[in-house]
Every structure is written in structure tokens, then in C-alpha cells.
Length: 404
Image (cartoon, rainbow, N blue to C red; front, side, top):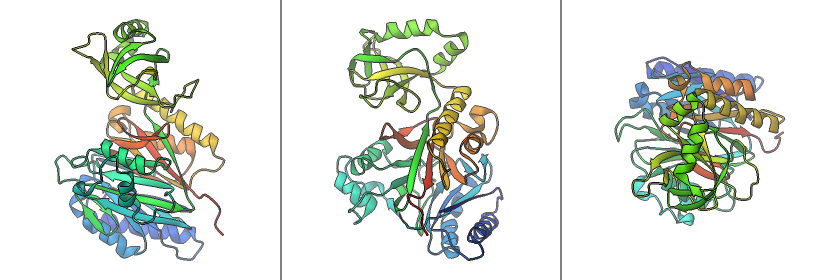
């Protein structure tokens, strides 16, 4: 399994693409020790400067590598070659050769989507007639304007409950119809494109939500829909006021700017750490229930929650912790990866470029990594797929077995 990640900042689409295709060809030729071996997959992300040439990008890639599957989207910023380019011309290609891996792109129009609870319909829509075995992973690139993405994720999760599902919501567009999506030989401006991978591949996921916990874990002892009435048998408002008083002045300021709640996803756990919480916004106190806390998630009684804060330092620490934990769990680094990072991260959060990709290289190794800055990040927490914000989600690829 071999990956390559290349990046161009040229404004001219044709010149940028030719530069990148030449680099990919040279990289794969060298990797094969003197014999040609074309990639099986090309993932392309491109800034709005190249958006109107999206169809040309897909067609030209297929001309150069006719046997490769092509997937991609427009982007508010792109990631490749250990760099992150935001707000400037950028075209990135991540190429992969995966022996023994079956790759299949798909495109779904909004009006053709199955109902959220139609698991069989979603299996058919995503995997076609290949229903004998689940894919090893599903990559998703939805349009933000034409889909209810959380309902889509619910349907796909029901169809593939044990399959890693990861991706990012396309960006780089301000109005409906401006999004550009690539799948196979076709360009789209709506709906959903994606890719299934099957065979000799494992796709690991790392989801760093960028928060740090405050206070202690507590049981929700009374809840209704998205309202938390009681925590550990006490009114939620009383608990929040008490917690706020224990915070430093800096953390009080962060709490006023935005408080988050982490919901433990596994009811069987007895201790909780990074990656165990699904982080969601605290919306404030409900006007009709003065002691109830409204959060951006449905909450059940007996759920364990812990409040969270987010800032640049917390986001960096969370990312480092997740990636180092991944590296410690795997003797060999992955062959390559894709990073789906929030538009709210990057230079706007950290004050410097290349932040998350640099941490990835330092933590995981010199692994080819491509990706883009998204309108929402897709990845699993506690075995369930969710749409996130202010998150970096990674899909990391390695062979399931050695291939001679």
C-alpha cells in the first residue's frame, strides 16, 4: 500500500493540475522501484479559485490514471504535503495504490435518498448489489445546502452499524449550487458523494473534538428531549452556577463565550477519558423551565455528562493526546491518511498555519496526509457516527494483511 500527497498554490487550474499529476506519476514510479504502477484512488480537494473547473479536474485525472477511482470536493482550505492553505488558491491530490482493495465511488441525489429508517435502502444506495459483506469503511462528502446531513448519517449508520464512517461536509461555497463534488467520472453540485473500501484494508479513525473537561462527571437524573433538568439529583442551574464559581478567571471567560457538554456514549463504562464523550453545545437555560439546561443533543436520564471548554490550547492538547494514543497502539504507522478539519480551526484558532497537520506528523510520523477544512466533520464516537463542529477527524489507511 502506497500513498502520495501533493499540493499546488498556482492560480491557473490547468498548470496546477499538470504539476500535481506529474508529481504523482514520479512518486509512484519511484515507489515501485523502476516499474510503473498507477494509483487506484485519487482524492482531490480544491479551493474556490478552481471550483468552476471541477469537472475538468476530474476528467483530466481520469485521462492520466484511467483505472483510478476519483473522489473530491470544493474546499475553504486544503491540506496536503504537510501544509494547510486557507483563503488562497490551492489544489491538492492524495493518491493511493491499494493492492487487494476494492474501491467504489457513489453519488446520491437529494430526492433519491432512502428514508432514514430504511436500512436496506441505504445499503443498496451505498453499496449497490455488493451486500454479501460490509465494506471496510465508507467515506462521505456531503453538500451542506441540499441535505439534512444528520438524518443521512442516521440512515447510513443503520445500514452499516459496525463500519467506520468518516468524512467532511464540502466547503468553499456561499450559496446553493456553488458546491462542487467529484465522484468517478462525474461532477456534481448537490447531494452526496462517497467511497466504499473493501478487501485488504483497515481504516482507523481518530476524532479530536478539541475540548477539555471541567468539573466532574455527573449523572443526568432527570431529562426531557434536549433539556437537562437535574444533575446528580440537583437542579441543573444550581450545578452550573456552582461550577462557574470554581473556575479561574480565564476559564470563566471561556465559559461565557461558549460552554459545552460531553455525553458519555457507552453506558457500560466506569471511568471516562478523551474520546469517550460526544461534545455538544450548551444552548442556555430554557425559558419555560428556569432550572433546565438546553443542549444541542437529545439526552436521556442516567446518561453521564461532564462539562467542557474549548480554546486553542485545549484543542491542541486534545489533538496531541488522541494522535499519540493512536501511535502508541500501532507498531507501524499507517500508509496514508485523510484529515477533515473544521473551518473554525486552522489559522483563525491557532494564529499560525499548518497546525493540525504538523501535530499529525510529529505524533504519527512522516505519513502522506491530505484533506480539507470542512463545514462539518463526520466521524465516530463510541462506535456511532456523528456530525461534529470544531473537530479534526482522521481516516488512516493500512493493509489488513501483507500482500506479496
